Image (cartoon, rainbow, N blue to C red; front, side, top):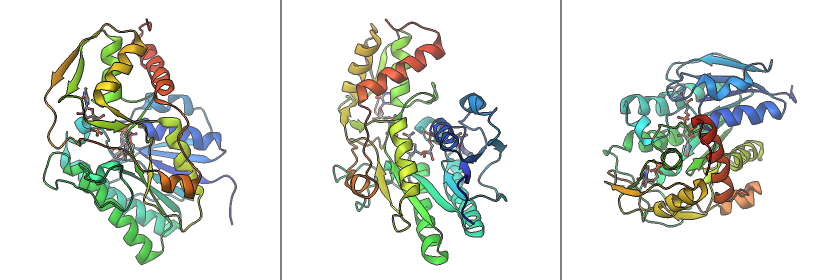
Length: 319
Ligand code: NAD
Ligand code: UDP
């Protein structure tokens, strides 16, 4: 029997993206089971959802099997910032690989549709620009980012093998850098770092010469892409790039943050981390044609909303 109100499991639901996804699914009238081990996520991110009778939270590590009955699964469980995923790299690989096996096993048993939050990191330091889904990537398998990049690549392999071997209904999104409220203020990601530094009047830390590029997607746009991918016809398995193709150098991002916060911060240069990709920009032709999706929130607007969030968190006035 097909229900209108679906039972949806969100693994990693207390994290930055997961909390926005839980919120959206509840708004769409579904029952949400948020599964999280709270490694990088927090109760604070989902506190506003706890009173909803259709929202349930379970503390659980996805590297262990899980027995629940659900209609759809979103697998977002994995630390996403370099500082966090490099803190315990073996656990990061386990989370991606064992987590995928456990959740795919659950999907197979319950016949649930399952979504994987993959990443632009599967392209490594790309030699094709912008990145299309058929580009196979340039990943260093033994570097400090490998636990994340190779873990996510192996998870994609598992998703497609469960699909081919057992007919599991899969959706794989390759997410490009996303920002917005509820990013962890200390996770070292560039948007949160720059905003927090600017709001506190601290120097802005630019790694390397700041000419490396990233493309920044506002969280609401991204979540809309997730929902569309999950609702697409079953042959639309992905992998599909979801991100904002507006590309900026890190120095341009810093200048934007300083302008929008009215900060007096200087820029200071720090060493470029090993294997830091020089450029990154999604080709979103597939998302446009297959999902009728494209981002609608410009960096300027998204930064203003994110600055307002952090200013509130830090208790500072924006100049
Ligand atoms: P996040 O760190 O805020 O969220 C990850 C969540 O997973 C946290 O709540 C964490 O506690 C939980 N988690 C980690 N290990 C777990 C485990 N073993 N068992 C259960 N829960 C576990 O990161 P995010 O930015 O919200 O990213 C969510 C997903 O999207 C991740 O899989 C990440 O790889 C992917 N992604 C994010 C971005 C981005 O720019 N934010 C880009 C590409 C891919
Ligand atoms: N970066 C920076 N200053 C910071 C944090 C990050 O210059 O304080 C750079 C980092 O070297 C990288 C880019 O910003 O080139 C994006 O970093 P982030 O960790 O946000 O994401 P990822 O490297 O995983 O895309």
